[in-house]
Length: 354
Image (cartoon, rainbow, N blue to C red):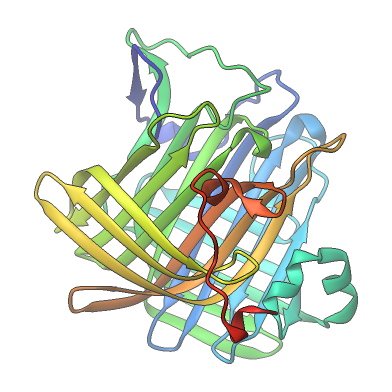
């Protein structure tokens, strides 16, 4: 995570729970989890973002089914406070800070044969059926916590501009996952599941992100990779951060590069990530299996922010696992900001035109 000058991170177990909201109207407290059972080809991610000063939460549930379909739901359920992560049928519970959490959901899911249809959500919600869905998943932390709250060197909260902020505090962790998911009566068990989670709190506008590419991968209990690259609208070098988990210890990332093969609609098809730490260089090859495109529209007009959530098969050395890539871009004349400034163009192939 980017650190302003003369600041440090404070990591406190109390930050696993909800905070007293700040006065900023766009105060956000969110938790995100992903989970994969590679043996059966099932993946999922889900998020709750409380916006108590706006009177609602943001709830998203996305499940990638083995047959190629995607079960999806989004809503803005009403909330009256920031006392719990519990809205829209989704609930996140802290069982033991930094160690164990439980996630559950009961509600409807839109089951899509073509997940790219979510580029036009109003149409997608009209043409695809809604089916009952539930999950109960237990997450066990298998790595140290990464991140914390950004504070001054003497421990005071930093000043943030709510109009430009994306968080005050941010934590992440590699996870092991057990439990089950059910979609329309079909059950999928997680026995040796892998996953990742993050949490953030503080004022947030999604449009404060210019672009970022986020790759969180947990291969097993001994090995995982996080690579984050963020662009800056003012120009200059990209901000590169992350870590490599090896045997319960984090190796901080000192350099990283992401090369992406896109289709004609600028959806990723394949990704190569080169991750450098003081201990070595790691090469990850990602094959995108399915992408769900999401968007945030700026109030009053202006550029949309597009977030592509892609189920990806990752390889590193002799390890293979399911995981995610998340790319977030302001769109500039239909081109992601991360690529528009580079002057790149997607490869044209017959299967790309959808």
